[in-house]
Image (cartoon, rainbow, N blue to C red; front, top):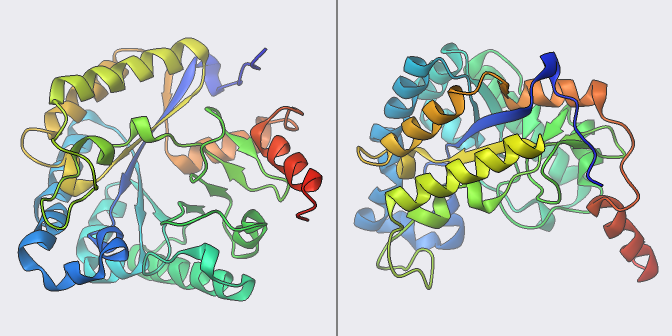
Length: 294
C-alpha cells in the first residue's frame, strides 16, 4: 500500500508551481551553433522579453507564490528581472552556473559550481538559495551529499516518486514528472529540429485537460503535484491562459497546499520517515550492490 503523506493543516495534497528560467542555455547545451543562429535562438529569447512579465503578472493577480530555477549566467544577464521576481516574493533556486552536466565533473568541481551558483543568486537577490534542480545530464553518484556540503537542503530533480522523500544525506527530494512540464508539448523549431521527431505543437485544450486530470489524481491520492513551466513556452499570449485556467482550477479547492519548493522541503524534513524497502531509491541501491558497482 502507498503510504499517506501528512500535509500541513490537514491539507489533502501539495502543489508547487515552478519556473525554469534558462534563457536558451538549455538549447545551446544541445546545439552550440544556436548561439550564432539569431532567428532560431530568438525562440528562447522570447522568455526574457515577454514571458517573464506575463508570468509575474499572472502570479500576482492570483496571489500564487512560485519557485524559479535560474542558472547563474542567466541571473547575471537578467539581473533586474531576477531581482524583480525575488522581490515579488517568489523563491529563487539554483540550476548551476552555465547549464553544466554535473555527471561529467568530479566531486570538487561539482561543489565549486554549486557554490558559485549560490554566490551569484545571493548577490543578485539578497538571499542565498537552498534549493536546486539538475540542469541536464545524469544524477551523479552521491550527488545528494555534494549538494548538502554546498549548503543546499533540497532538490527537485529525480522522478522516482510522487511525494517528497529524504536522501540518506538528509537532502529532501521533491520528485518531478515530464507530463507536468510544458516543453514536451510546446517546444518546436524547424531547423535545427527541437525536439527531433516532434511534428507539431500540442493542442492547448489537450494540454490543459492533461494537467487538470493529473492534478485531480494527485489530489485524490494525496501526493505532491509539481508543475514545470518556461517563460518562452507558457508565456505566449495564448498559452498563458492555459496556466491561468489550470491555477484557477487548483485554487477552487481549499484542501490543497500551494507552496514553494522550500516550504515543501522544510515540512518534509520534519515529517518524512525512513524510506520504504521498495522505494525506488532503495531498489536502485540494492541493484548496484547486486551488480558489484559500489
